[in-house]
Length: 263
Image 1 (cartoon, rainbow, N blue to C red):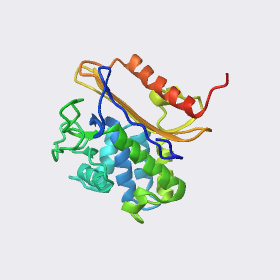
Image 2: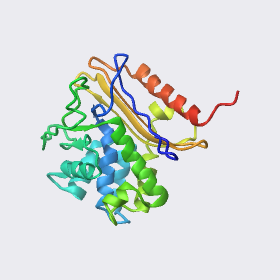
Image 3: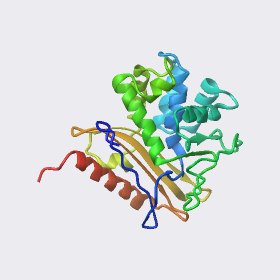
Image 4: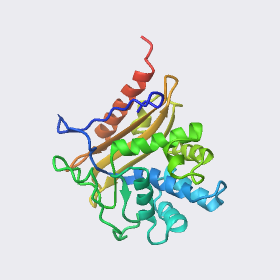
């Protein structure tokens, strides 16, 4: 999404074939769902959270710490139904395919089965995790909402959660997202020093094989700011190096679209 014009491009490929959109394809959200969790937490916080809460927010985003994430949901949202509070907030924002159905701790129960436009498609399936799902367009829209809120203090987040989500809170959320310093995926495809406010994620199975990889980012550049969200899935294995290169190359191409390299 071009954050100046609002122009948006969304596409999906399955084994080299272009998939018709919409609805967008549901993917396991993995740690990118922590963008949604952060918004739900900030909705319920005052302007000056205590140091323990701040520390857990930083751990959740910069270190992708699942214990810190569960702590925030249990203490700030609801001890039992915290994940469903996140899902309710996403529904209120019109993000019908984005949800969290359980805590991150191993063995946590699924609190609700969600059927969404994304996961009810019959033409394609990424075998999305029943615990947490999103689509590239919805997580991108969510990041754009935070961006506009931080820039001007208005937009969807402020309209849906008046007086609970403020411009100052949105600016703080972007500062947290900018602390996710992976050096890979979208971040690898842009010049050093570029501000990238993002959350990455991937999931390994019991054999430590990756099937899902994702990164959703706001990229700040001299030629214009934009949102880029990329989700990958392979039923057998996503090998990290070529998958990372694919995302980094796509990120580099988008960056150069906005900032033409010198001949």
